[in-house]
Structure formats: structure tokens, C-alpha cells
Amino acid sequence: MIDKIMALTSVFLIMLICASAEDEVFCDSLPMQITEWTYNFTVPKFDPSVGTLTGVDIGIILNLTQRFKVANNGGSNVQIDSSTNSSLLLAVPDNSLLKANASLALKKELEPFEGTTEFSGSSEVNQNDSSSGVVTYPYFNTSDFVAVALGETVQLKGMTNTKPRVSISGGTSTEVQTLADARVCVSYHYDPKSSTSGGRQ
Image 1: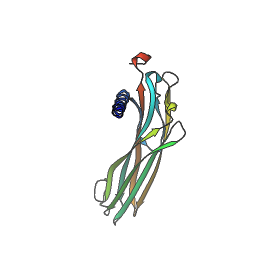
Image 2 (image 1 turned 60 degrees about the horizontal axis):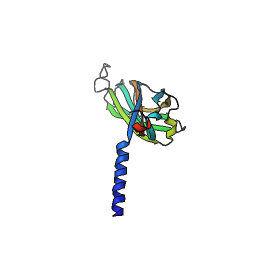
Image 3 (image 1 turned 180 degrees about the vertical axis):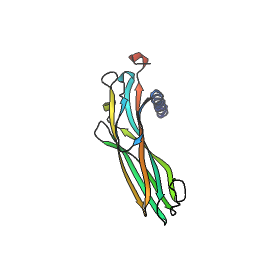
Image 4 (image 1 turned 90 degrees about the vertical axis):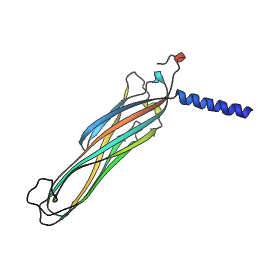
């Protein structure tokens, strides 16, 4: 009987803890632009007046886009083999680096020059490709994200590193532009203060 009571008590406590847990999410974004860029993602620190911070997750979304235009200028077929690997490195308060990756690849054969260059025929390619990398990391030094003063923020420095590789077997007119945008979100998991403790409701 005692075991049953203890088991029921444990279930009740777990339900109580789950019911009282709260989350706040803050995000900062950088619009699409040519890589390589550096940007300070800025989010508010956790306000301890609302409760006790129990966990922090940092989410990163990296969106990679490539505008690829190639026209075969010669009289024989041309092989295109292209790959682009991009990373967003995010510096966090404990001096570690978090990473999100995105990549693109293109393989195509172009027929001989058709007489005009309009980037639309069988001797040309004109396309936009995109891919995304989405990752979430737990951050264990939660005190780094707790505000000491009202309105305090934390800056997370992001840096893109892009490595393109393009192999073309013949003479072409080529235009390649690689762009990336990113979004960083910090999720605060906390136990709220009860109304009797003077916390915010």
C-alpha cells in the first residue's frame, strides 16, 4: 500500500512539474545576402523575476541559395560539376562554437553553343537552388543567459564560411552568386514564480 501511495505521489509530482514548466523563445534573423558575412545575433537575457531558469536551447537555421548561370560558348558538349558547402559558426558565451551546415550540388551537361546567349536553351543553364541546415543545441551554463539588469541582452556572433567548387570542361560564360540568411533562436525553459512569491503573473 505504501509503495502504491509513493507511486501515485511521484506521478502527481511529475504532473505538477510538467504543468508548471514554461518556455520563452527569442529570435534574431539576418536577411539573405552574399556570403561571407559576420553578424551579431542579439536576444534578451532571461528575466529572473518571472521564475527560475532550468534550461536553455539554442536553435540555428541556415538557408543557402545559389544563383547559377552558365552558357556553353563552344562547339562541343560541356560538363558542369559544382558543389557548395556552407557553415554558420555561432560563438556562444562559454567560448564554444555551434555549427549549422547547408550544401548544394549541380551536375549537368550542356549542348554546343546555339548562336545566342540567353541562359534559357539546351546549351545553357539558369537556375536558383537552395537548401537549409537546422540544428538545436542544449546550453548547460544557464547562468550565462540570466539577466542581472532589466533589459540586458546577449550577443551571439555568427560567421559564415562557404567553400564553392566548380568544374567546367569547356569554354563558358559563367555567373555564380552564393547567398545565405540565418535565424538564431534561444529557448528558455523555466519554473515560474507563484503569485505568492511576488513574481510576474
